Length: 355
Image (cartoon, rainbow, N blue to C red; front, side, top):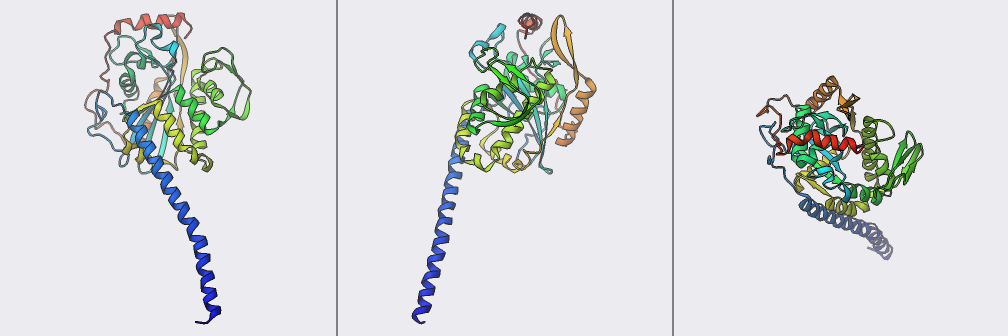
């Protein structure tokens, strides 16, 4: 081999090193970041772990479902646990400000989602009188909330995720805001309940954390159904923003924030199984519950249209490929409450306070 060939060979080796070394560094960095996120997720899931009293499976299932192998459902509950609302009006706990039921289909890798208006007039298992669905959590936590939703749609609720307003604020803040097409002017209190502190004008815009919370929680702009639509808008905005490449470096902080303000019966393994739906989260099919405003004993409720409930139930069952054959009981739930006779008194107290 002559000297010229030797020089060419050395130059080629240098070029290979110049290309390969950065790739190795990027790969090591990616693996390291992946390991870091895995550690964060495992730690967060451990802190957030909270099983339901029923155990690992719904009473409408013969067997426990595995998100990695089966169709499954998830109930997402947003809780307002600000200090002045704890134990408000004699409630043992906090009410849900948002309830969203989502179903996941294994084969289609698809997601369907329905928002349940907080003032929906429903049967709460174990209580004498029908009441607002938002009160189920106040009376019996996630156990009774899950029972109530199962009773409403007659389908199993396999998993739940409960987050508070702090988690919501921190998620949106970490992402740097969310893009939303605001349909009408919103004037609402902020997270510290200062009246008329937030004003949002109509139009496509980027909302910061406080604005996004006000947009999702306002009940005075129009109807409870529209409020549910706004909540779904925010959820979809968060999903879209979090799937952007620029958001990847923020995942560690996002996981940490959520872990500190969340409870769920998902295990770490369950959470990893959700990754296969990552491509579907931006294309969620939204279902809508129809109904009308109603006043019963001078208390405001949202009276659900029974045909609409049946229609949503049928679509969710089809998406889950659930035909009721796994039913072990009547599906009325097991939640009970020793203060059931106080339901009317509680509701009347709420009505007198304009809620």
